Length: 102
Figure 1 (tube, rainbow, N blue to C red):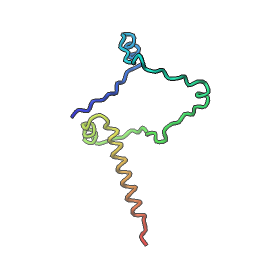
Figure 2 (cartoon, rainbow, N blue to C red):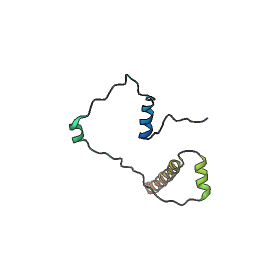
Figure 3 (cartoon, helix red, strand yellow):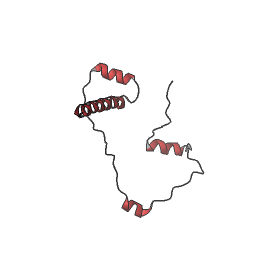
Figure 4 (cartoon, rainbow, N blue to C red):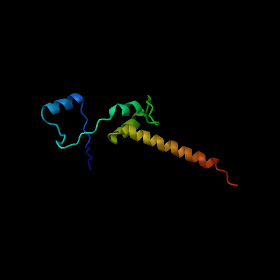
């Protein structure tokens, strides 16, 4: 079964061209959001995620890379999940060894 996505990515120029051609898909009755006002922006705080990913250069065996790529889109995310599972398993193993039974 093929999974189709509903996400469409376009550049700002592509969006402007689409609107100019009359292909705007915004509903005519769509409500406008109220302006935030200056007070909102004066008090706004930038919040960044704590768990930002780190970019690394990694040398892999070719068959490893080919296998993950063959799994389809998101192969790097899948590699990250495999590494995360390994780390969690090692932490659990270490925690189990550190438990003292009296």
